[in-house]
Length: 249
Image (cartoon, rainbow, N blue to C red; front, side, top):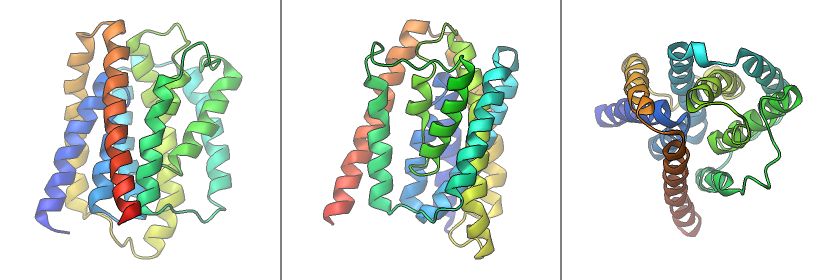
């Protein structure tokens, strides 16, 4: 891997962690696309999982007083169940399909709230969130927009949403690292960034998370949801264009 590519991954890790520090999502979506530009598809899942695991774990620690640990625990149960199933299925999307799936995922944030009957604060639906969100994470590589619809009907504040989603995503990304990392590293870890990239990217993602937290404190709950939709939709549109380019090439 060239120095320029490694530096690109490090910088994007910081910027996207800051974005997720503000909105609790969007950063992972942006980082996955950035990695897909410079890494083999299987390596993007593992590298993305490692970087996002670090960023989400740190965000959950920073906002731990706002985390609903009951939701996180039930989500983890669902995550383990679906990971055990997917691990038995040999699936790896093409680069074009990966961008298509990432581009379609943001459309979920535009579902009318009257259509959405999900509430992640309910035990059964927290488990369902673990199954569905982790399942999408293991196929498309990102599932922030899907996770978000489990929280739009809750009475949680923006801080509670960001903190609890971070806790759930720790388990979702752990599953991704396990499912894709085991066969990848067994084959020699081809395409993975060198250790120095992670050594720089992980602490910088923590710094980005802290920086994003300062912005979060200054947002109102109304603007939080409004800006989130616009940012996620813009990222999704870029990915759909890239998917079309790859399919017709």
